[in-house]
Image (cartoon, rainbow over all chains, first blue to last red):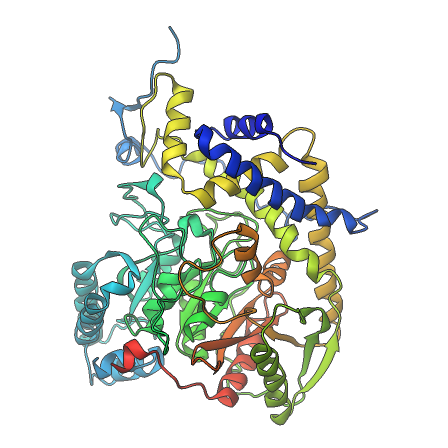
Length: 95
Length: 491
C-alpha cells in the first residue's frame, strides 16, 4: 500500500492541517516510509487474539451525576483567542 | 556551583528537617544555577518569584512544626506538559501560544500539596513527540555532558529539559512524562535516574495528552531513593482520571535496602540487536554480573514479540495523538490563524501551529483510523499489543525483574539522525515494549562509554510492583557506583 499525492491531500484535509504543495511530496515519502515500516505487523499471527484497548483491565468507574462546579464561564473563556460575551467567537458559519 | 545544588533530595530533606538550611536558601541556590545555565535551554518558563514565595511558605510551615513530608521545601522542575495554574503551559508547541491554564494538574498539585517548590517549566519535544528534544518550538535542549569533541549533544527526549535540569544541578528533581521512553531514554543520555511508574499509578488529569493509553508521569532524580520519595508525593488514585488505578499506594521505599539476594532477574534474548553498540552490550553483561555478585540469579527469558513493539507503538500512539490533538482548533485557547471560513481557520491554525513531527504523527494517526484502514492497522496493532503484554506476563511467571539496556546508544550530537523519522524512532526500541504493556520501568546510570558519555541500564517490573523494581534498582545503583558528573557541573 502506497499513498498517492491525492491520498496525502485527503489525509491532510481530514486532519484539518494546511500543507503547502511544495511540502506535500516530502511528506508523502515520509508517510510512505513509516506506513511501509509499520506494515511488518502483518507478519504476526493474531488469529483469535482480542484487541487490547487498555492495559489496566478494569472497568471504568461511575460517578454521581451531580453538579460539582458552577458558572466557570469566565475561567473557561479566559484563554479564548476571540470571544463575544459568554461565547467563543469563530468565523461566520451560517449565511 | 553551590554545595546546596549537589545535594540529593533525601540529603536536602535532612538538612531542612534539622534546620541547617532553609528552603529559601536552597531555592535561591537553584534559581542562580538555572539562570547561569540558560544556554542549555532546559527551561521554557522560569518561575523564580513563585518559587521564592513557596519556599518561604515552606520555611514558615517548618518553623511552626507543620512540615508536610520529605518533599517539603524541595526545589523541582516540572515538564511543560503539565497544566499549572496561572503559569504559561506550552507543551513545546507554537499552537499553545500564550496558554495560561486556570487549573493545576493533579501531579503538580500533589507535589505542591507535598510542599515542593516549582522552579519553572522545562523544555520538551513538541507534545512529547520525540527522542532528542529537537522538535520543541522553543529550540533544542543541550546535554550538559560535553566531551573532547566539544559537540553539543541531545539530552534525549521527550523529557529532555527535565533530565538536563536534574543532571546539571538546576533542580533537585524533575517531573517527566513517558509514553514510549520519554523519561527513561533522556535519563540514560544525561546520567540520571528516570522512573516510569505502572500505567494508572499517577493521574493524567491536567497533563497535556499525547497517547492516553500510554502516557504516564514519573520522577527524574539523581538517586533511586529520591525517585521513591518523589513518586510517593505524585502517585495515588484520582477520581478525575478515569484510567487512574484504584489500588493502594505502597510505601515505595519500603524495601529499598533489602538487596537482591535470592531474586531472579530475567535477561530477554530478543533485546540483542545488531544496532546496539559493543559498549552497551558489555555494560548489560556487567549489570548481570553485578546483580549476581549480590546474590541474585540471572536467567534468559524470551519475549518473542519484542521486534513488533516499536511498529505497534507507532500505530497506536499516533492514532491516539490524532484524536487527542483534534482539540487544537484555534477556538478555545492558544494560536489562531485567521481564514475565510471556519474550516480554513482550522487548517491555517493547525498548519502553522504544529511542527513537522507532530504533523507527521497526526497524519499517520488519521490514516490508520480512517475508514477502510482501521482494522488493517489500528485493530491489528491492538492485537499485537495484547501479544506483547502476554509475553511479559509469561516471563514474569519465572522472574522478578527484567534487565535490559535503556537505549541502543549514548547521546548523539544535535542534528544527527534527522534525515529519516524511523532512525529517530529506533532510540526507543528497548523502552517501548514496557510502555506498550503498561509496566513500570526505571533507568539507572551505570557507566560511561569510551567518549565519557553516560549509559543507562533499564529494569522492568511487574505491574504495580514498583517496590521490587526500586529495590532492585537501588542494589544496581550501589553496585554500579556511578558518581561521574557532567563537565558543566564540574566547571
